[in-house]
Image (cartoon, rainbow, N blue to C red; front, side, top):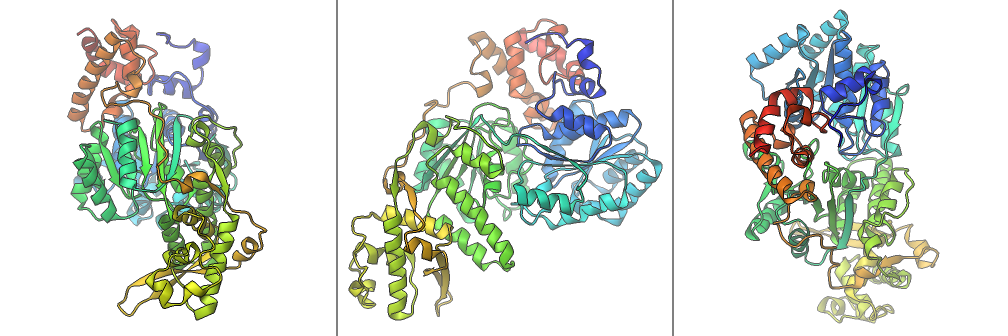
Length: 633
């Protein structure tokens, strides 16, 4: 890596100067420069960029440049308090005047922020969508607008405005006021996940019809995708973490709060440092757990999807799902929280028939209109197709977002291609049995009973209803229970089998199976059912082992020599002390990659620190001497 800045010819634009002097990066990545220049020029933009792709710089650099040009303050709409706190802290570290207005501030603190805002002392102000539409806040914006110092609106996590998105928040709908009330003030909306339907909804709801659309590649090549069928999911998860990510930070997503707490306790019993996170926890406990995850190393956060949006921790080495998400957007957003530093990371998921049943039931029982339910079913179908896929996971995932690609060689299917079997015959036998039990008694039955009939199991319940006399009794003796569950899983997801809730006098309920319009083409043999051979297996598919113990160096330092690794360890210890003093996550001070570059270069003078990625002018001035002292130890 060069120790000198680029030639002046490369630093002509104000945007490049800010990028290098403030943030310490030599060049923009991908479409960042085009986005930044467009917004600096006053244009509206809708930006789709994967997690870790550098979305924040797309509005932070224009905010600084436009403020230098006398255009005033940028208002950032952000959905989470934790995200506001960390981003404002990071901007302060880079020497940028930033602030937030949220419920964590006292009255006097909020008054001080408002005063600084009115005097032009703030470059970026972060606020939640709920606050933006209050009369007081709108009054502040009105004053700035009338003075001509309202520079830019940045709408982060813009998918929240869409009813088709995976994290719809009604408060985002009020953001139409920005276009209607403050004409001429440019807006940039940003999200990491939006299929065509969600994208169109964002444009309509935020009135961005004239905005320029920037779509980056959705590919995260450093993430390895692995999806397997549930057997004993806790054992499978433990085996995955111990073999692949011992001692490293990760996030495990569960569907229920109860499951979160149980699994966190189990992981702790297994010797891991695991913490629970869900909306039912006391606010102080939840915040304490999140702070530990951000500030300490090697923490595994077990959480519902209430956790994660806006989490900037760069060294999360894995994201695991022990329950299937609702759709591909949610899956992509959650897995994208791994490997934000660009180093190798894993996305692991286990799924089963109950996942499909539960997700399908929640859709069917929701009070939404039929059009909305159909859209949700389509999204669930796409996720199940990804889980059941026998070809490249990445090709499937990117195709969902309209991006063509070639096999990646870095997902479970590419590394170890699965065998495939034809489940069409088994599907027809299951559907025929569902039809016959209903025709015989007018009743519907659950999954277990239907499979017992098909497999010829002479249970007490089978005898009670005389189902051992049905013509389909025992027609599927050659199929294992695992195979039949895999077939049913696909039939449910594609709508070829419906769910019907039966209420008991006790108040309890259970799900039964019924035929649908989608059953007909399968029964007629017009729609083949292809499944992974692993559906019939009783042994979970093993992941590719990258390391066997937690003693290996951090990913950022893996290629350093012994002396450089010693410097890296010393730098991390020093960084931890600084982070504690500033009450910030360590990565806000310097990323691991920056420390690794410093350790490798072994600088002796301040000039030697020039050009290291992440070493901006303010950080060089604030920390340069201390960095040299640590390296000289």
